[in-house]
Length: 416
Image 1 (cartoon, one colour):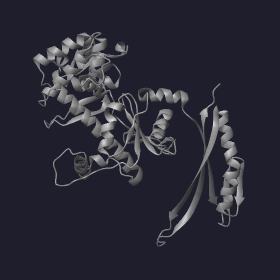
Image 2: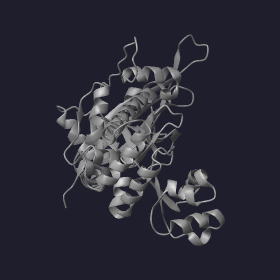
Image 3: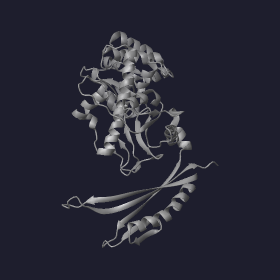
Image 4: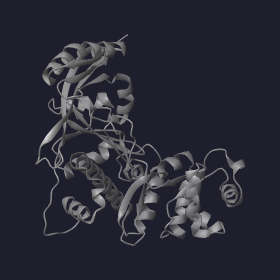
């Protein structure tokens, strides 16, 4: 939330150039505040590997949150991951369906090493009339209560392939999956206890048995891994913004350097990643996982009061922002410049004359717009961007393209 993020920035000794990391149940959003305002991107936020192409806050969204599914590599390496898939935490499912605890205990005694261990599925929606064949068979077998995937594989003709079939039903929103999540790990570690801790512990015991770890040790490893993934996402945001490098953490060299920076491997090469701006963390799981991520990157972190509801608070008390851009471009013939103002286009003899005219006319306009939007105590900030392009075979020479003056009016919502 903007209000909580700015409050956190001010808590850092008045510095308002910070990273804001919002960790929720499904995703983590990363953005930058400069002088208390979020950076904008005309191509939109990046969600996964895709740009939304609608101008908005320049944020990077990764599939990592408190409800992300925790899973182990199938190659036997024991490598641990979380996300990008969201599931219902075991502790929450058992809170709503207490019989889940008995199902997990039965699975622990019967088949703890199964790849499907610790996962359940429950019906979702009312679209059963639109399904037939195997879909109907599975939904009829589910009834109205959750079932473990192990039980389903033993009672359906396609056995272990049930997992593949369930993915199709999940995509159609006919069923929901439940599995061990970072929220469950916090229950096991005693850092969060809103729902059924017994179910969370049984889930940790089932997954931990596959890598020879106790529930506590496995849950601690989950917490460490979440912090590492958050640190990786922050570094990825910086490299993407500054060097245009995407998915660097998947390249062999990137993986090797990251392992050494996070001290995941013993090496003769010392490597350290340092984030120059501080972090303001919001969202329900933020206090549990982001301090360790900040430590990995050698930076300071603030978790504001009531950070777990920062988005809701920000929606109510966040600032009002109005923004207007003025462009200055060469006129045809190259002997003058065209200034695009709210009142129309004007011809001027120099860029500096255009800047002077714009800064005299536009602030009052954006200030009035902010007040119309409900703001009080409005402040107008001005930023200038000069754009040029290289001349082909020009020996390093460049040609002027345009100057953009950005006027931003910021104010707090007026009290009725």
